[in-house]
Length: 247
Ligand SMILES: Cc1cc2nc3c(=O)[nH]c(=O)nc-3n(C[C@H](O)[C@H](O)[C@H](O)COP(=O)(O)OP(=O)(O)OC[C@H]3O[C@@H](n4cnc5c(N)ncnc54)[C@H](O)[C@@H]3O)c2cc1C
Image (cartoon, rainbow, N blue to C red; front, side):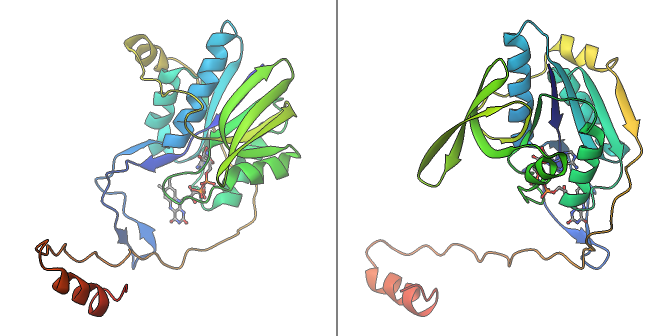
């Protein structure tokens, strides 16, 4: 059995976001990058499957990105992946990323391709569906439970106001979210062995030029909190009506 886990390299959630070059580029200065939190669920689930099956599934992690993402891939190796692949290209847009993942995976016979439900930087939530389409495989997201029995899988998917349980045959593509697995903290042995695990760098497959980013904009700054005396209901109503205009 072989599992591919796609890893996005995203700013830490506490990062202060700003743009450069006339608001056309994300400013990476001083930003700490991490494995996408939803991708960590996908990777942790892959490691759980491996542990439950006596270490048989081979786990490959893949990122589409420049050399700056190597430490992120090394962390994934420390968590439990066996080998890593970096497609050496700027992740221009979701279709480009999906084309690169599909080009890599198409002749590798992966039984499962696991991703996060969405990246936490550009939040498209679309790469899994695109990869499924490009490879002619079913894709399902967001899944919060995955049980395997031979060639069959049962997955639980979050839907508005409830959950949906599906049965499907391997191989398929899935976008994962909590509580599919518990995050794994790399131990010292994992960290040491990650340094010698293979990290292959591949040149990108040919792809069409899909989009050009014109500009980014931050949301308007929030105004300060105004505290009103609990006894002063009149003032509260006045402000909600005439200033916030919500009543
Ligand atoms: C340093 C940096 C700069 C960027 N600059 C721009 C920019 O200027 N303009 C812009 O619009 N976009 C930019 N991107 C974002 C990039 O285009 C998106 O990450 C990519 O298009 C994926 O789309 P998404 O984030 O919507 O993924 P989603 O569809 O939300 O991701 C779903 C899942 O797909 C997988 N995935 C996503 N991205 C990757 C990846 N790169 N490699 C492997 N697996 C992945 C993960 O498992 C993820 O959880 C930048 C990204 C980085 C890291």
